[in-house]
Image 1 (cartoon, rainbow, N blue to C red):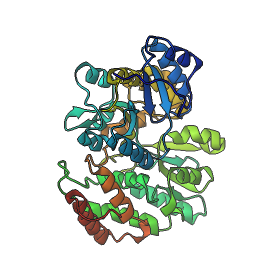
Image 2: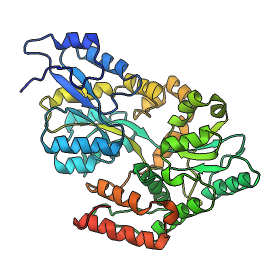
Image 3: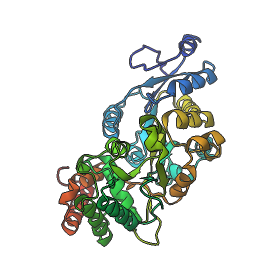
Image 4: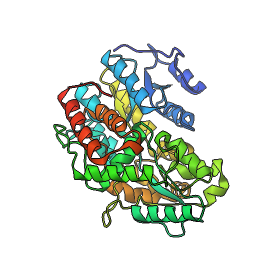
Length: 417
């Protein structure tokens, strides 16, 4: 087994204690390279605690990667395809599990490791780390979007999408802030929003075997909702360019009355605009089909161990430390990362910082993943490009296009848009 040593290249932050530990031991201390979320606020505190706990068995070296998921995946794919052994722990978007497992790039976790990785973990994050009934990741964070609203403008939190539309229309008539914030730029966040609407109507994009598209009348209905939002004057004029920061800004700047966004909204708004934060309410996503609960799309990140790691057992131990209850709580309080461990949800410190925790747990119970398929990246690209801009959606024609292009992707035909 070849031992790598710290070189300083790519190091974001390694404590003096960690460097001292690295220099100890015959032949040098094994270095565990970790990629993903290593620039999060408060991460150095977690890193130092884990390097101290390792007692010289290994030292964790954090590495920077691009901030957006698509660029992260591209870097991982290129290096793993080249059998790069310089990556040990991979911080993976929850949508990559099937693709990376099928490619043989990440290790299956079995026996005691699988048990340790899933003990006390909420089931939905475990599902995102599972492919064909095998566990390939250590769930690290999870996420679901909530419906945020201004309490001074919306006295009664809506429970249906129609109530959201009706209240926004009334506010617009009264010349008050009325915008409904939604991510609809051509990127992954648009796919998340569309998947939430489609799943809430009972629809899917591909079958469980990933052999054919499942585009049907429910897809047309979901597209009709998007088309209506884009053209009825209740969304931001910049809807087609809106990602999470733009949706946040619409609320921060007093344009929006509603927003579908992640739980970080509250803590971030407390810093950005305390007055708006005091007026910020939240509730579960509204029913898009009356009588049926909305089904939020799961977000989050899992730690996977690279097939090409030369220290797989140490890499697993390091990842488990980075995901222990203390690290999960600190990650939630410092960086806004929603934990996967039930005991952290039960912690009074977490509940104080996340007063919406019960709504998060309730949404997780009915949340759905994005299509679980090795072809997810292709399907995501097809969906975001075909549905852009939302004002140009022709529900039936757009659904037909989706069906054809997804089938072509499954069959390995055509060129991605």
